[in-house]
Length: 211
Image 1 (cartoon, rainbow, N blue to C red):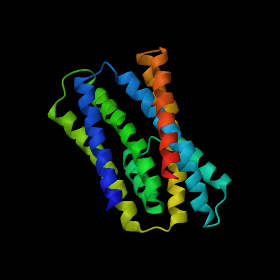
Image 2 (spheres, rainbow, N blue to C red):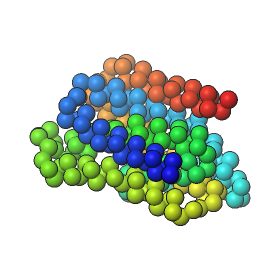
Image 3 (cartoon, rainbow, N blue to C red):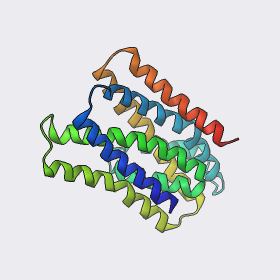
């Protein structure tokens, strides 16, 4: 149930991002930079270390998990919204603490996902009912992915494989999507500062959660 609740939060953040795209564009570049920092922090401070530890229970090596990270980086465009929900569920089923950290990263990312969805489908025009329906479908995808993982009842070392792929998604989203988009909107220092803030936030959160 906790995993599904967190995926629902991700769904709401997508809707919120769509609203931001329609109502408040002035600080979007800072949100993009902050989101990139959160994803990078979640990947290196929590997601990859926990995935490697969990995978060891099933005989998988750290090299193999990092290989899956590369695979995740390369296949990012194939159904990533659904995989967001699967990632939250998989991490929550391994550790509630890790699930919360991963959920924070995805929730922040999904705000920008909803924002980008609206900007893409409207192309700057007023949103139609069809455009809003597309946003709602995108928002519902994480819940679908999370439900599938919860119902599958996979052992932790199999869930770790999902997290290895998720690390690749996070890295691609941060470095190939959010940061470039943020710097295109505003090439100043603000984006870098926002990204650093996101990294520090996750680093502190992981530190506090492990005490």
